Image 1 (cartoon, rainbow, N blue to C red):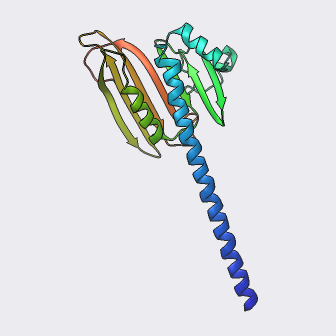
Image 2: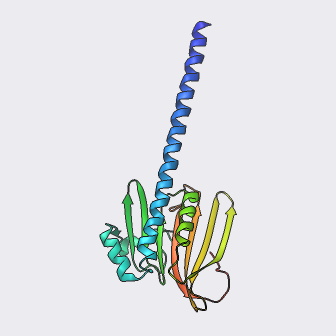
Image 3: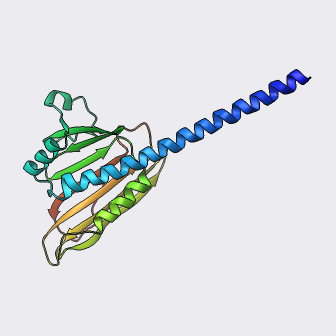
Amino acid sequence: MPSEMRMSRLMLLLSAFVLAACNAQNRQSCVRHQDFARVAVDLFRSACVLTQGSFEPVSKFAAVGHFVPVGKEDLSRLPPAVAEPDVQALWTLERDGGIYYLSLPRDCCSVKAERADSAVLLEHFDGLVRQPPKNTNIELRAEQSVQALFETRQISYAWRESGSPEETVLTAQTADSPDLPVQAVLNLTHRSHNGKPLILP
């Protein structure tokens, strides 16, 4: 009996140790994903927003920031979530454990994060949107959340001068699934203003 009691106590201690280790590992993973989200928004601000998504300044930013260009042969091997069908240029960056993609589809500039905390990313994206260029209004274009096997969220804002026929649309999309190639997508798109809500895919 004493032996069985000692064995039971040992198993309880072992279980507690494993649980504590798992909780610590989960906390560390959460913190890392929060950091990845902040980096993604910072990269989006520098690579897409400040350059307005123009090819030459984005390419220069990628070169200075040590992004690695993806060749045409490798593009075909990447999923559409990473490399859009009309992508003109694509770069990758690995920083402090995070993997990011910078791409230039037609009329768009995009930053994607392989892993990112959705709440933190949307919070920092909101902070970015609240700093529009001078004399520019902020207008909500779309917001939706879908809960299926995992939650996906999409939100879009437009920066537009009063009366202007053109607008700059900033979009954040997040998905809480470890099985997807990317968990966060940030897009900047220039388009004509038609007063209609933005239709998100």
